[in-house]
Length: 316
Image (cartoon, rainbow, N blue to C red; front, side):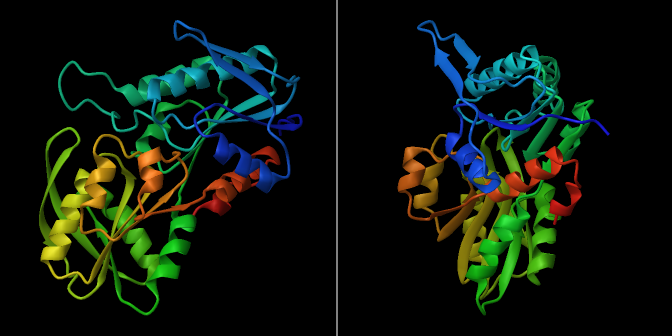
């Protein structure tokens, strides 16, 4: 068994609040890092402490601004490699470019694979992430990948809201059926599916409902909310089919473009998300959004990886 040095936690600028919360759970402090931007946009990175022989974990979701955060992560990884860290684990709660995991049109890149290659070449020895948009992205890496599920965090929130009312878990498309079914099984709830047809990127039209939601609390399950087109369209279908209350639940609160405005004007009463992506100012002001932290989940995973314990015990 490989022996690694002392535990070190570093953070890029994408989500320092999550990194601080993880350190609180682990009872340690963030290793200092200088992250500056030159006037022409170039990024400057300097590790502020000795990491030679250390077991280093870098907290950096590649959320908006995606390209900046991705490049900053790459430079941090390279700096750690050149500083002789024993092992470097990239903790990327939200993996950007994950939706581009295959060719759907001719002459298009497989961007998720390119990102995997970039992080590997930069110096990453292991990846820790949460709810990859497509599970097969794990195969893009020739190194260990731990794809945690946010289910323990979100299930706790749903159980507290369920009360005595009957809840039905709704998949907004065919691709999310497995996720919704897993949640429904653990909540003892029924399952419904919405037949969705996508006309263009970031545009979705919800069509038919498979299952019954009449008189029930309908919870739309997805891995992320981006422009909220899918969620809002699904909500309208559920309302038309007699749902008593309509909620939404997703791991990654991307909320780009008109996402927040759409949610505020929608029939959805509450949206439960995690802090894998920091909320933008507009999202923080939205009264419908409830944020649950994944810091404890990631802290346990980091501790188990560092101590060479099982990570599979964290999967629900």
